[in-house]
Length: 133
Image (tube, rainbow, N blue to C red; front, top):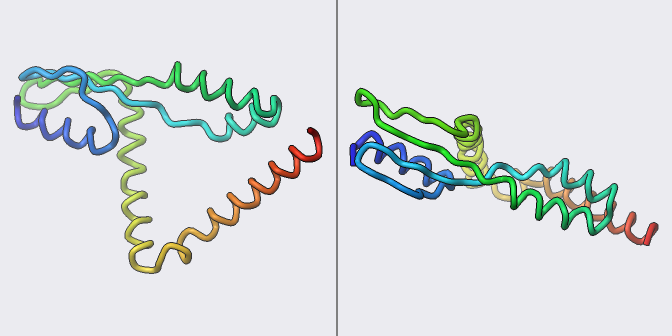
């Protein structure tokens, strides 16, 4: 396998992609599209309980993403869901930065806004379920 292709596959595997087929100059990898939390919450609000399960089944059935790589003139050419790769690489830098902040300042000092929002949303859902069921 060519070195540039092998390095690109290694970076994609680090982002969660799984190799399906590989040859000396080509490869195909599969992954999953991001989960749309906002859509899940809307469906859950409109159709309590059953809507969430329905959306999970829908996402699992339709979220498969495929990327094809091949070497052309010594460079790796990507075809398929390139937007997903660009999104993952952009988020990777933010993820590394957040991990660095957690290591320096501590988990609670960095993550407290997300924890407060999560607890508020959980409390809201419990309140809505108790009120309407």
